Length: 534
Image (cartoon, rainbow, N blue to C red):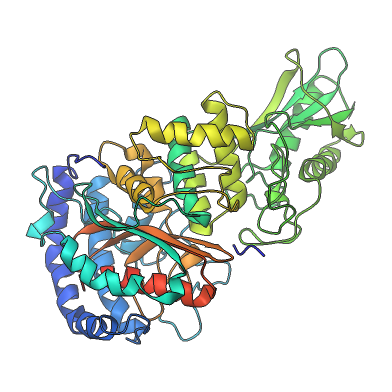
């Protein structure tokens, strides 16, 4: 059963450094306040790798709250937003107004508060994702300590990586995101099954191919010769039929606009069809029918979910395109246009577009995909990457297009295999080196278009797939993408250490036998980095 050689760059811009210097006293106070607890954590973890820390969460996150406020209100405000709905803007607003947890999709989760029973209230904001980047000389804001040495990291991470819970094969890598230098590696060039951490690669490839402002458009077209109305799928899995579109492309709005255009032509009755030919090949993922994703088709509404959920596993309709077309016909009727029962077709070059609706920008889709580990968005973005690369928009095209885009960025793709965009395919392979290289590329000041890869990462103890993790560890400090399949557990992301360094990490474990124990062991590794134990 399925459960859901880097290069140095210039460091962050001078205005970011000045802002970080201004807020450093507050960050230092927070670090001093938390230091005794970090020390207790070090004593607890170093001798006994399998032990889980028991520091009270509210004590640990107090530092995160203060640091988050300072960094969000200083660095974030100085640097400005990354895109029109940017994470930086959201974190700044949160720090000032204390109303949101930050980020386009970094909400409190479907459960309301986004916290587990007995857990503290969320800190006002997690640390700014680029807070540890330094000045052009390779230093860090305010003269923070040097990055941890390979020896120090080996002393701390080595015993933790020996935990039997991590199975028979594991890979690990840690990089300094200010310099791009790898600080630590163990099996870092061994290609292992990545599970959902492959979505980091999907995100980088899609943003490289399409850009952060690209939108996915669904349209209606009227055939001039026959009068046939065609609903043309644009490969937007977030197209919604719900009354409250919440900023997504609305099938209802498309119907309203289409009906208005038809009435101008004095058309009140149409033969309706739908076009899914944007995508190629099979619609069925190699895992078969599974609640973790719908059939991969260019036309669907609400990810073909049969319930009110917006993330996570859910039952899906057997034919998403037909279901969306039937819903569209119903909406047309409400606006005085009667449609025949819809069937599959293909819009010709002669068909004139009547109306369009478009998704949020790709930057927002990437954030949503990563925060919620959304498989449907991942498969869609992989196919759009294939199209932009000149490949067919199917699984084979994805396999060629994603590594091609990563090679274009100079990333180490040797040994990697991409058979899908979501990581649900167990034959996918990726290395810890590649995962950390992807994170480093996303942190490169010369690559602002890739920043949503970092802003979309779930925040430990706060958002997405990390909402209920790190209750006694690095809540609010670690941002990471999770990956879980039967016998596979992975984690890759970033954190600002107690010393003020921004690190990227990747930990992969295969042939694990206890998912919970393996997950705990991975969280233990990330916490050791975040606590400054190294």
